[in-house]
Image 1 (tube, rainbow, N blue to C red):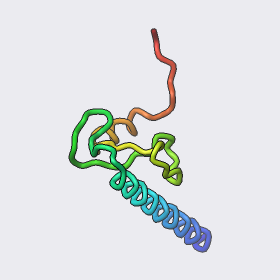
Image 2: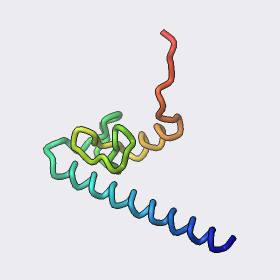
Image 3: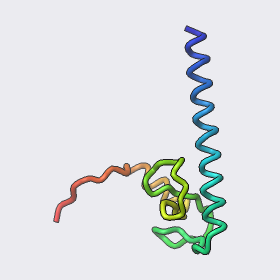
Image 4: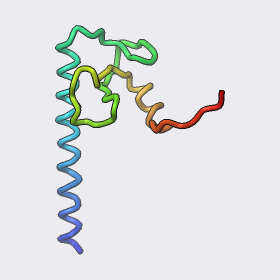
Length: 88
């Protein structure tokens, strides 16, 4: 059991590290572009994160990246990102 658990923990740590590298790469791509550093939802210019539009952290093309502030990012994650049918 402990060996399997260690293997699982190693895989989780590796995934976390890979995500961190991808986010840093995305941030670098956005900073190097001429795109304004402003949240795409609310327009704030502080506490920004790189956001992958298609939610794939390895898809680091400029057309798939946008800035989002911490507040808007956490609100989006709380509500979910799947397309839901809406009334109207």
